[in-house]
Image (cartoon, rainbow, N blue to C red; front, side, top):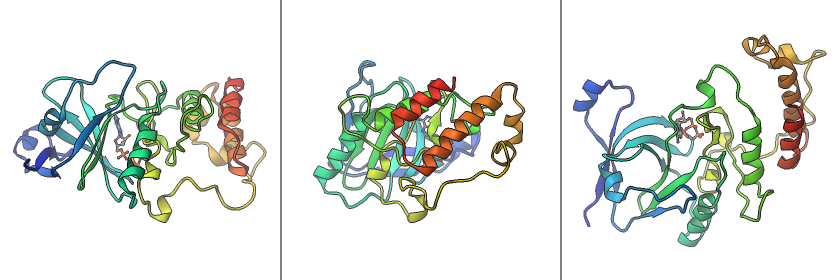
Length: 260
Ligand SMILES: Nc1ncnc2c1ncn2[C@@H]1O[C@H](COP(=O)(O)OP(=O)(O)OP(=O)(O)O)[C@@H](O)[C@H]1O
């Protein structure tokens, strides 16, 4: 079998230049498997050849690898994450970790549709969320779906393997229907020290100067939004509690619910 390629064009190029852009190529050598993840939402309708032929647009370079929006001839766009710097796991360990990630099924988690692995390449294929991430949005979002997703990942709502998120941040919260992305990848990738997010914060309790703490920690534009203050303060208190100790996610979910 000949090595195949996913053509990748630069995201910053406009469409006319893109047409002429030199393709960078992701080479996928012999012996790779595209494994589809079972889903409650019907069968996935592409195969390895469709994916290899798809044109791709770069979405960004993250800590775990590069991310592309891949458009196939038919069917919805998908996101391909090309993992890099994998831990030296043997095939069984790798399969166990990937399976644990693939088994996470919650309405507020970005579903993993399929994964590909060969000696040279490890690719994760996800649903494409057209409305982008929380960071790009100018207003806040309901934190409850995120807490629900984390509570689920921590294994608190049913008996499945717990998978710590390990990298929760605003670019990993997609806002189509509030979908938390990138969960569990820290179990596969050897991150540099400064990128690790799973460790507990060092030092004693976090203190916020001032009687309300509002001026010091909230973005001014958000703080003036009508009705936002009460909820924001409550969330900040919950956040500070999480810095002082590590509460159960179920407890956090309940507190957010109670805060309305
Ligand atoms: N399934 C998706 N649908 C739409 N946009 C996505 C999807 N997955 C990732 N993105 C967006 O693509 C960009 C790159 O994502 P990527 O996960 O590679 O990097 P990151 O989130 O910036 O960093 P990290 O690797 O630390 O998570 C981000 O803006 C992210 O919000």
